[in-house]
Length: 214
Image (tube, rainbow, N blue to C red; front, side, top):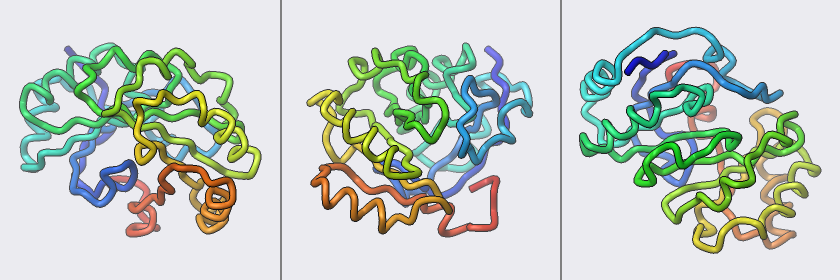
């Protein structure tokens, strides 16, 4: 079971409801989308072939209970579910960031799937797999990455489609860094009385000049 890995590093969880926690990140190579604001283009095609066992061994060296599988798009690789299963069996809290265009139920539901719903400014909003809404559990998270007011309206119109089982504090509205001021997004959320979590990218605030390994 071989995966192509772009990088493995230990940092602070910058997003999600677990923001601020130390976490090991396994960034897999490859993505089926090309979002206009993507900040990990370096993971599109560069990486090292590693077995699931090798990845698990490297994760263990950091001595951290939290692991996030990210990309790229993790579900673009066939053996990502095997990696998730191995990490769960090893006792880790496992998170997976996914762009929402592929079937999230390919991975064990004990994994917290952090699923994007792409907004228009991404250029990929027609690729959302709407069937994923029915696959969400109370353990998952949904993220809207917002770059302008059109994105915000798009997100609010899809808000009622989210399953009732998903707690409102696991619905994330995230402003595109250096494009939409977070205070503007906060004002829109308060005016619209949206019951969701405003998300800041902590790693971008802590390490603004560092693009990798954070």
